[in-house]
Length: 114
Length: 116
Image (tube, rainbow over all chains, first blue to last red; front, side, top):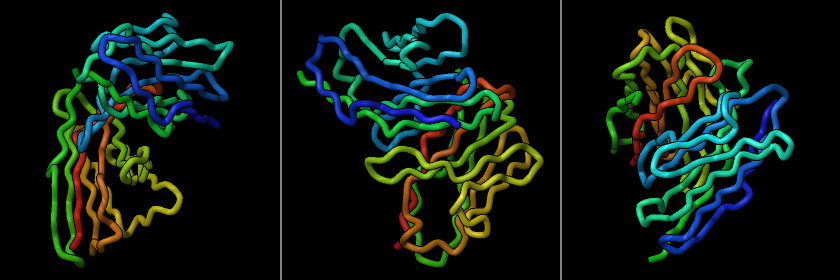
């Protein structure tokens, strides 16, 4: 069994300030973890993925996430927010024993204020 | 990066009509494709998983006779909403993944289905 919890439904930051979107997971096996971004009326775009290699994962658009097994966390960060980062973000856990089937978090809405 | 094309992007039709949505992986072979439904301000709800050449696996509560899925090739899967009614109005999103258990899903841009 697996689950994922995004701890904040809404996050608001000012442009140029750091972004932190929190995600905790549970999995019976060594999971793969992903962060996706969704802009309004669009599909999901992959930001980054963790698949048991380096625990600090760098993604696109300046985002990165750190896999912390002891804390069962995979928080998404960015040093400096840009207006274009405003979107919905989903943390996803995939149980590698059930090829490709994933569990999605409820999403975090990121608002960036000018 | 991997590209998934979903068509059409928007459909408006009358109640009782059947609607077909296509999902194509343009530059990789998708051994598995997924169909999701997303309600406003909510996360994605998995409807079914399809593997090329075999029957789709539907999630609990999803009517297989209502939502017909075909995955005839490694690059194409279709979802047909049969005899659509207003309650079927939603945002439908497909995704595709290559072989292996830790492959990321690559998503189409979604289809906004509105049944009048």
